[in-house]
Image 1 (cartoon, rainbow, N blue to C red):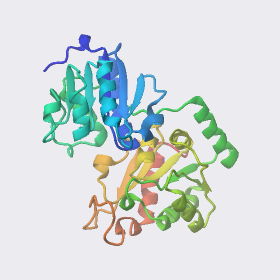
Image 2 (image 1 turned 30 degrees about the vertical axis):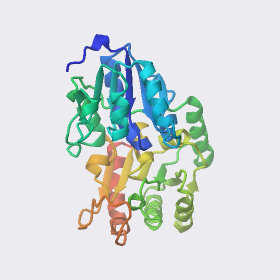
Image 3 (image 1 turned 60 degrees about the horizontal axis):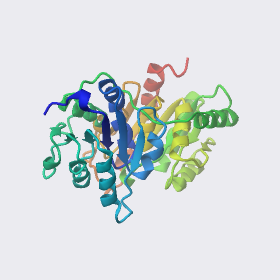
Image 4 (image 1 turned 90 degrees about the horizontal axis):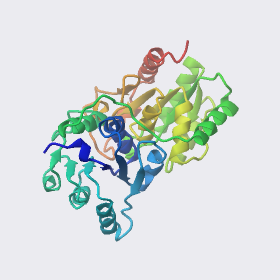
Length: 343
């Protein structure tokens, strides 16, 4: 099927799961706006990602799918059908979103050709997911359904109030000319989270090498680890204040450099264009690492268990605990040099 672009007036994008996944899907936004300059574009996602999208010029409305509500799926399908979308792009393509797409009534229904879900779509993205970075996979999706690609920019919504809050916090806490390194211990699975002791060593090494000021960025569930990193560091770091995800994004945007796990905050940092050094163990940085040439990643490839993709480590978390701090600092140096962070 070939999309008749002049017939597409209303578009729905679907991506559930975490904030990082949603941010990586935003790589399609500029491309869709160029292909469909007058179309209305809505986005269906889960509650945590609302603030990441609301306020972006390209998104007309963020529709929330709350799995906790019993009648949520049925009422959502009715709501979507009433909106009369011309094109639905299901970037998630699980059984539930496939059904939503199928029942949407849209002329053009695009998704990944997974077993048991092909019935829902008449346009298909690539069958092989592990050949592309997660952001590039979305661009390949566009190409697969006959749309052109010229932009690889990611998006995250920030208000001027958020930006002012972050700028004032950094100025009041560290002063105007400090070299601020953000450390983010967040991570969706326990095995993806670098140990507090290693983060503390890295933070102290960045202070010793670059006279850095360390800001510990944390979200729900990270409080104990943030406190632990602070207590283990020899140099005094500053824990960020409690924020929502948008204000955390603003704080990420005003840091000079971010050191983070494979996580939502890591992807937010790439979207707000702060250089990122990501630490990897169970995941593949070539597929899930920070997106773009301005960033760097590191992992201990010599381990036989590297890239295990296990949620919990059955061993001793060697992928992080045995990661040489000197190697991390070397990577940070590469990041600093290529982004001209210190002149």
